[in-house]
Length: 289
Image (cartoon, rainbow, N blue to C red; front, top):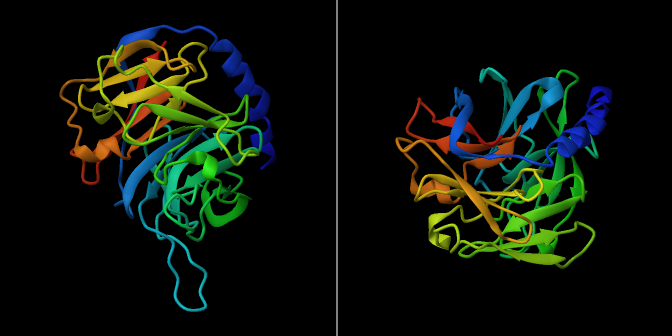
């Protein structure tokens, strides 16, 4: 995986270039990925690795299970697609995925599982893991441990976003406007962000319940899907409302969009559009210029 190490300076250069950005009044479609393989469970989230020119889509929703004397693992899969939206391959590393992201600090594709906090009791194969890739970026079935359960993440279904500059996570808490800032070295949240949803003209039941994206853009770091109003809301790291980008009004979002099918990768917010195509389609929307 030596080629991935080249991405480290590239990633931080990109972050430095994103010091200022304009919020696009209307979101622009950057990519469409029609799912050509039936999801094993619910399409959960999206990651991107530039050097491989690959997108990785993680399913989630099947708890790890095993028979007597067997290792417990989830049947949820991860799927690779190229930058043209064409299917490449799939793997079953064994996790109930909630977040998937490329970590330039470790040069690894990493997943955060359901119930990383043990909020609903201990469950096997919960935590943060790296998913192994072949030299060409194809997915492998093998993986490695990074971090075990940590109560600092809060709600069991949170889909944390990762900030590689600070090595922190932003874990949205359900049924509210709170985002917990997590340092993986700490067993307690290090800060709580209260999103000003009132200024954005939204209520907590309008927006994504478990996910908030991290853009890396100063003053516009947090990206939140407003399902009911078909918009993308932008906030800074203090929760101050910075603006909005409108999604196409003919986008047919469903109740499940409140709980999964979102992600932020390659400078785009991803939204799962279930009615389109045989197995649904992921849209990548550019909301910051």
